[in-house]
Length: 168
Image (cartoon, rainbow, N blue to C red; front, side, top):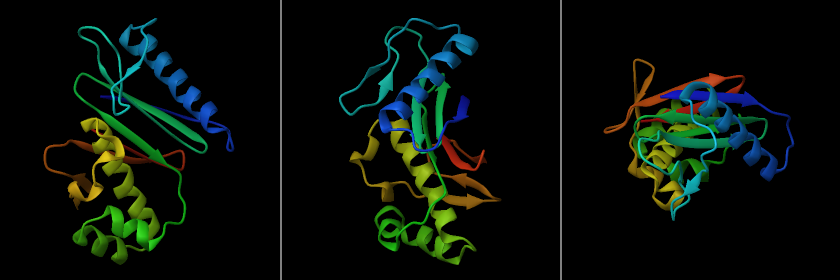
């Protein structure tokens, strides 16, 4: 898996963020995967893919001020989020009881929740289900500071001030 990310101006309209994420993807495909001129198609649930045989798997994400994409030889999902405040209700809708306890014990609960959120969304994108499945189905735990979830290889970092997570 290769992750690509770029800081973009804050306040861009949603369609401009979308276009910036796709521009990053096309640059990455041309530079590192020797793929150009291939259209991106979407499944019924909106998962983007490259049509044709032997094409890599792709995933894209954007948030105010940041765009990213992932390209891999196996199914992949990527998500990014900007730091922000988060409601307790959102945390309860997304996290398991064990995750909630860990978040509430963290020095910065909002930051810890956004780590869980980006990881869970990257898993859902990898699975091709988007937001159609409850994120509580993905029980994540941190071992030695690294995220773990059965059946998925997870990646998490803070890049340029944004949370960036990927799942393979």
